Image 1: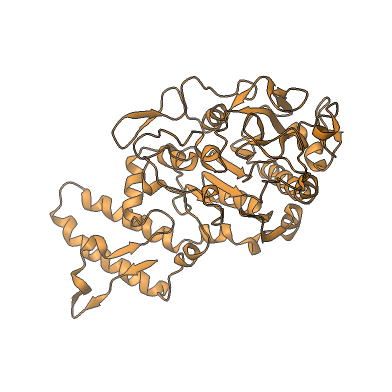
Image 2: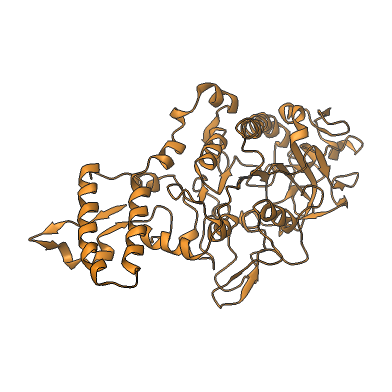
Length: 445
């Protein structure tokens, strides 16, 4: 919401102070005024890197052995219905229902031995890399909040951390929560009421400019008696607040009508219908993510579809895989074509894998012992598979990869030294971004 306090009988209504004169409300940023937020961001000494991350969260846990790690030699009640196909990288074979990925496997990294899942139907581990047990004071921060705190972008007219996910029926799937990093770095969520808060709600641009001019004249008096330079600094933050409110950069990035129709067609539509108790299968969210990164966002998250297939696993896969295949490959191709691939890391994963044995409902149940992840771009060495599972797809066999190793790699790709950088929790204790025994994947960095 936008609160602009006008004049009444020659003074500010309700005796509002200069700090309350212009305040921009929630915007998904914890309720801080924009001047306060911008001031806090400057104090955090962020870098000027233009690197970014797009995270595709697959709520529910996708079936790892039906995607990139098919077990053709396993018994029928484990093997499943799908056949592997060759890719453009010799020796790499993936599911027949992912032909677009097969055609660009040289631009992808298939992690087939992801371990360390806490086994919960929740986004927490995918967004923080951590267990939600025994958390430090304030709680573990999400990847986007950490990046916002450490490296918030120079283009302040676009939030550093944007979560495109809707509010999902299964509450633990949702994210964008507070942590010890602070509410000022929570995700901006341009959905529902928040999007309406981004308008001026009846305040004309001319009227807003009048108030800007009045604020300048009011502060001019204070600057004349202030020798510290503090007031000029406050003016700068207020000016940035105005710029963020009145800039079209964020709204333009969210407005797909401004995108080339041929590009939109390449991503496909998917469906806006909510899947299960999670999210819609909206392919255009991948395109919005690219547009936001291009506009200056540092971390963008997308929740895509519903993958908790205790029944009809193969029928649901035939419905979901082609859309996911189209959206993911369109995003990777788009990033390469626009010169963004070197600096933008893409990751797609869920909270755990699925059981090797197919149940009586033709589904696969929860299996936290091994899962998969897909990486792309980010300057990484692509065109490879990392890790293998045993013959039944139930255990990591060669090169197990921990969730925190993935996070270490993401931070490395952003130019952050995980062995040196710490952030204080609410008790003042410094916390490393990942546990020190976990390092970036040497296969890709």
